[in-house]
Image (cartoon, rainbow over all chains, first blue to last red):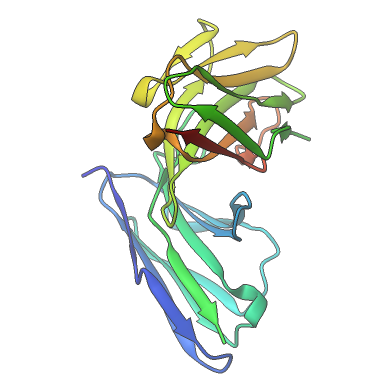
Length: 115
Length: 115
């Protein structure tokens, strides 16, 4: 299995809702990433988990809360979002975080719309 | 600090003609360089990478890229463009001397192959 699977593909939520994005990989990768991508812009790194521990938080607002329940799963919990948080949220994984030559494998993304 | 520049927002090429998507980089150490492609409403897909060795790197779907250290460039090329190559292309770099393995993306270049 060489895929990163993200659910849901589309999510519409109000500013008071609580929702979660889910990401799963079965490649044995030990680093997992959340990126935010606005239309026609490059992905922006949000969080990195290495061996199930949060290693990088790029000063992301607390209304985004990541969780890594095990080595195959990565969640992004959403609460009290703003309309400007509407974007494509991409999950990615790599063998580990310590080798700069590692390739990121991306999921197809979850398209989030905040009303 | 590491950075990537993609000087062209859009490249148009006729089907069957050669294509080039430009990328220049800046790092303090030695670069690890990557090209990714993104089709509409999809995640990023890895095309090729340069780590060390031969300056000409061959990748997926007939794409290749040439690492030029003196010009700090890593341009993506294909001898004969297909309509299906139309997509958004991102160049990315890691600085293997920086102690951090975060990937920095360029702003992206939209490639349109005209039938």
